[in-house]
Picture 1: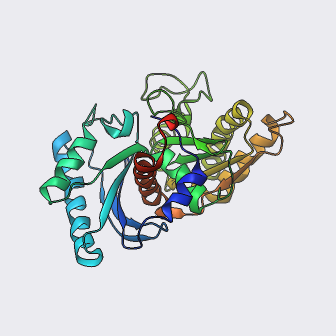
Picture 2: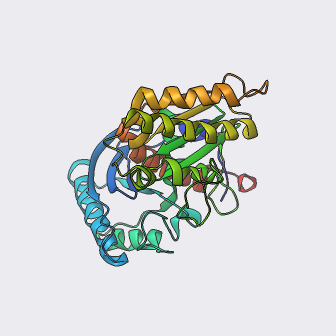
Picture 3: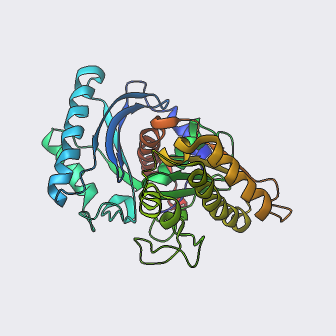
Length: 323
């Protein structure tokens, strides 16, 4: 896997014909969503289904496949079948391009061959289109850099604080990938060394302290019914992780979305910002800001589509030395 400048991605989107759409797929521990996104980032259609964690691997995929087939039919009905690419954003860990996925919060999928399964579903529907995938939080970062709160920024972290916690880091205009595509996994930054056991096996990861699943396990309250103290504590934990990332990568902006962060609102963001003010004391990180995502619930599918456009453009347009 390799990086591509966000500005190049955005410029190349304008070259796609107006009738072209991407089939966007978002995989999360709470829900799975599929939609159609045009080259300007407009979410044309979408469907979603709850992620049934009691289902077996193939049965769970069939729930997703039914959404894919529905969106393919909508594309045929309203866009002359002009699906030209598929983008998948999945909770991780993943293998490159979502060849296999092993989301910690979806136990049934361990090295599940998601890309192949999606491709087979499309072929059964009479479509042969390229499929690209990446971490859902990296997709989120692309979306916020394209159309959201990080528009015009070349250095930032995008974070999702929801059922789980994930991140994507843009540095010098490039989305960092890492050796296996899992760079930016901020949910596994240690924020409390004596803290709770994480699904990854470590203790005190941000995901074990601030995710929706962790909040309910720690407090006995669902994240939809937080107390003021829970919202403050969650903001502080996220602030600690963000401060470490800002100090390490020379960043001054963190864009945060996800149901927990946005649901907790100003109390969460004020607590996170207070920690940044306390912990980002180096000249280059002083003044780092944490801001809410701008795209709301459209972000995951817009980001998944951006992954698809990015993959399509680099396959066609990028010189060999871009790899």
